[in-house]
Length: 171
Image (cartoon, rainbow, N blue to C red; front, side, top):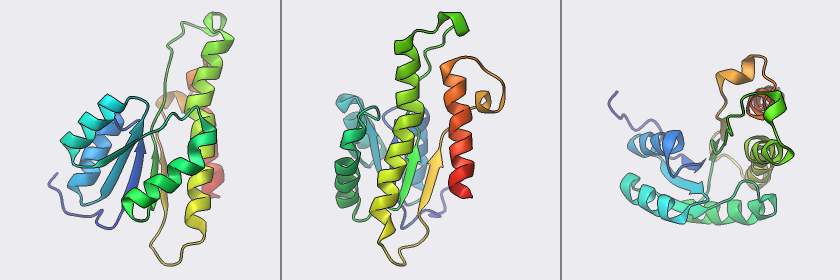
């Protein structure tokens, strides 16, 4: 598909944007005319990806919810008024089954995939709440087919919870 500038005026944060799906989304968003900021934990990956894509970058560990307000403020400043958030950062530790899951594995996946997205979205909405007529604010969440099937592993549980959160926010 040829770029057609359909995202001009969008100021988008993409978590997990240093590689993989986040990188691909950020690259497409820039090609469509958006101003993009990729975020993640690895400064070197982010800097290289941002240079390749032609966007900005900022370090963010989505497990550190105490940093979210400052992060959103900085991203807002860097993008001159953020108006879109893509909650893409996520991990799967690929446990074989229910009995193979440790408490640390459970916490890491819930903190990254659900808690991080929940509280980053909260900080984003608070930042954008007082603004008038800057267009529609958009929030996207990356989920998985495991979110709509039964699963006893933390990854699938977090994706089912994300799907529920999206429906709740939309309601």
